[in-house]
Image (cartoon, rainbow, N blue to C red):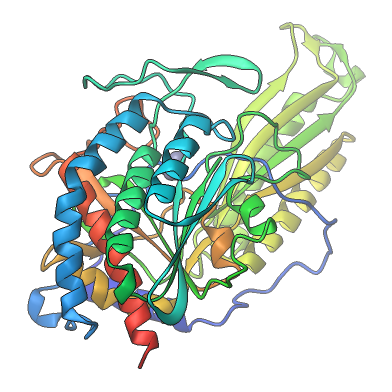
Length: 487
Ligand SMILES: [Zn+2]
Ligand SMILES: [Zn+2]
């Protein structure tokens, strides 16, 4: 288990991160075949490990808030408060009617109707069910994008609330129970309320706001990721969501069970991991289990490969530079106790934070797999699909906007987040434009956050009074970014 760091250490580490050069290890010389992307899942779960989270330094050590127009700040407070009851009603409505990735039809209509009512230019059907609203401020200025994801998960809800989900959906052709177990219902409601707040003061806004409501963050429920198809944020970017008008900066948030209600948490640089999926097929030669020398045993070879892969992280890459995880999640082979089977199939996940390190790990995995198999006379193939890239908060933008988040959260109500091994497709926006992704705590005060059911759990619970802080944070980030651009 990782040691607990002091806030000063955490800060120093975050700063060191921002300054670290990109290439921080020696890559394997062997080239690896071009491996494509796509294939879905995740985000969310245990976005912030509570055991590692740091409490904010004392108020005295904090920088003062940005000097953006305090009248606009005051308006945000009033308007957010006025929208809070609707925010919670939307959240409950969406929670009760969750929809899986690429099927967010009802949610998208709710969003589009709302944005139109606010007088925005609205585009629907982006990346299947995505909705984009454009709010042009009364004064010229930068384009700020705000993003919410709309999809739910194939989970059967076990939370005892009157608006608990009883919804069913189709996940890759099979009927499943559906629940907003990652809290994307709150993201939609928060962004709808933020739209209301900012639309109410649009004449005074020095810039344009692009509201991005995106489908399928967790993965599409209608197509199986195969390494060639794309969806969600990546598809929205491909369809030009960051262009016309061109986005200057993007902000997004995720609710987290690992943080106390209403608290904000973020970090500069790599914040959430890249996620890749891999497949290993080991081909041996079938024979009688009592006479293994008559064949080639793919089960023993696979066992060696599983252990060999674990030496990449522990013995081969520099563990001090960036963490990484290789997990073999499935292993299938054989159908009878006394037959050495012909083949074994394995699948797993890789988590990394640095693009170069990721490619290096892929190459080492391929080498380990093939070489171990060859040592026994078996044949093995290694295939990897890059699902999500690392979520990297641009250091300059993070530094610029941190005072805003600290001011919104208030003293003692924010923290520097540790890295999360979960992944987020917000990364695909951040690859194109400077972006900042932060967490909002939703576990009721007085509850032990280390024991709260995590995102993706059927018991994932959201403390609704926290949600207004999401609206306040996104609205203030927008206004402060625009105001700072005027100087
Ligand atoms: Zn999730
Ligand atoms: Zn999520």
